[in-house]
Every structure is written in structure tokens, then in C-alpha cells.
Length: 350
Ligand code: UT7
Image (tube, rainbow, N blue to C red; front, side, top):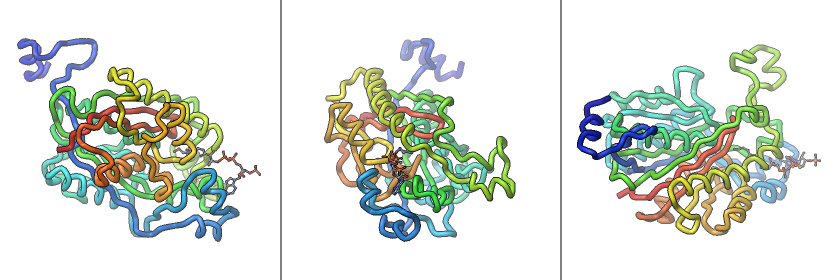
């Protein structure tokens, strides 16, 4: 047992349970985001595939999305967002202990995107690794960061959700290409008083649903070959309807469970930041949860940016004054895996 725990157990400051002992709380001390300048509108898409602005807006609420230029990779957007989050937290990159990047579009299969970020921002002492949990990646990463800080392993963790989905979208497939966009969001997780900051989380997965949202080729199961490229198997394949049905259930379940775990009620919540996939989904989840006006949405502007969508929205809500100190906030995500999960926070950035 590490000395710090032994001492705390002996003095009765913490109790040993079946769960790992928690010494302190962990909070989000700064946020940042970065999106490419180039805007791709629904009207632009009308010229690329058989679709219409009317169909896209009615079915998804998306009006435009950002697309990275050819010379920009995921770690560039991630690094920009990370530096803004560090600045917001009043920290330098040299102070960061650990970088966790949630992404499905790393620059390279290996090394990790987090290692590219570590080099680009000059976080010399930081350990670095990626999390692959689809669009739930940021919720997974924040939850993990909470545990590592709360147990005293690290003092400053940079959590990033970053994607260049435009690189894995099939621009000839109207079922998917209208949905996705590029961007990155970041948060700095630091220690705080117990009972403040990140209060509880739930993380879930169901691998039996892996085929409804997948890139079939390019991994060990179907290595890249001329045939896989010709068959367009390196692009996102999605069965929209099953994902839609799962998504509503997942958002309601994760929100309800995480609130119950934290001994909170839906009425106690000031703001819910859901994964930004589809406006209809967000509205349906809001209706089922009985809080029609508490779910944040910016999907019209950015489309679905997978693991980046929650931290981009979080940064927007924090900087725009929608989120205030003392607010109770829920982050809730769902995505490929299948994965889903939620975290509840007492927002105390100051
Ligand atoms: O991060 C998680 C990622 N994924 C999601 O969250 C996606 C969840 N699913 C959805 O959001 C919805 O299922 C979609 C927006 C993808 C599709 O909406 P839908 O109401 O479920 O439409 P649908 O798939 O049932 O398709 C209806 C029709 C089809 O035509 P037919 O077969 O009825 O003639 C599609 O071919 O709409 C057609 N369609 C389009 N039409 C114009 C599909 N995509 C388009 C398009 N433009 N872009």
C-alpha cells in the first residue's frame, strides 16, 4: 500500500472498502477547443451526393460541419485545444503529468495520438496514451482521469477528445457523409476537495453490437489490401436505425444511473451535455428524461465530431456563460463498441 494511503487509513481519513480508496476529489480546472476554419454546408453536400438541406435538417438538425485541410492531422487540433485548456487552467504544458486522448482517428495506428500531442505541446514529463471508446471516449477518459487524480497517482491530467472524421467518411455514402465533422476539445483535470468536481460516473459496453457502427478494414481482422480499398471497407459503415434506437436508450439509462449513484435527482441538474450526434436524438432523450430545456446542443454548427463533441460543447458552454460555478452538470455519451456512459460533476472551475 502506498505510504500516503497507509497514513490516511491509519489516521482514519479514508476507509478501505472493496473499492479503491479515494484521497481527494478531482475537478475540471480548464477547458479548450479547436475546430478547422473550413465550413462544409448542407448546400455544399447537395453538390456531392443525392441529398438535400431539407432532409439533413429535418432528420438530424445539422446545418454545417468543419472539415480539416489536408495538412492538418488529429493531433494538430488536439494540441490547439489542449493549449487553450491549459491556458484556461493557468498552467503550462511542462506541468502536465498525463495526457489521455480519446479518438477513433489517431494520426497513426501507432504511436498513439497522445504521444504526438505530447511532443507538439512540449509536455516533457507527461505519460501519454489513447482511449478507443467511440463517441463515448471523452466520458471514459474523464472518468479514468478522475480515478487517477482522486487516488493520488497524478496531479494534472490533460484529457482530450479529438477527431478528423472527414478522413474516414465515405464521401460517396449519403447515409453517413452528411453526419460527421472534425474538431477537438480538451479539459484539464486537477485535485479538489472531496465532494466537489467529478462526483460519479458510469461506463458501459456491449460488444455484441459492434457491427452497427464500424470500420471493417485496416485492423488485424481485415488487413489493408487492394481488395479492401476497392470495396471501400476503410470507411465508416453504420446501420442508422439500430444506432438511433440504442442511442436514446443509452442516454436515458446512463443519465438516470449516474444521478442515482450520486444520490441526485434529475431536478438537481442544471445542464446536460450529451454527445452531439443528432438534434432529434437529443430532443427525444430530453423528453424521456423530463427536462426539455436542459440538454445542450451545438450539433447544427459542427455535426457529429465523435469523441470531440462533448468537450467542444463543454468549452462552448463554459466560455459562453451557460455553465456557472456551482452548477450540477451531466456529461453523457454513446457510440461505437457499443459503448455508453455518463459522468456527473459539480462545476467548480474557479
Ligand atoms: O455517434 C453515433 C453515431 N451515429 C448516430 O448517432 C446515428 C443515429 N441514427 C440517425 O441519426 C438516423 O438513423 C439517421 C439520421 C442516420 C437516418 O435517419 P432515419 O430517419 O433513421 O432515416 P433512414 O435511415 O430510415 O432512411 C430513410 C430514407 C432512406 O431512403 P428509402 O430507403 O426510404 O428510400 C435513405 O436512403 O432516407 C434516405 N437517406 C437520405 N436521403 C437524403 C439516407 N441518407 C440520406 C441523405 N439524404 N443524406
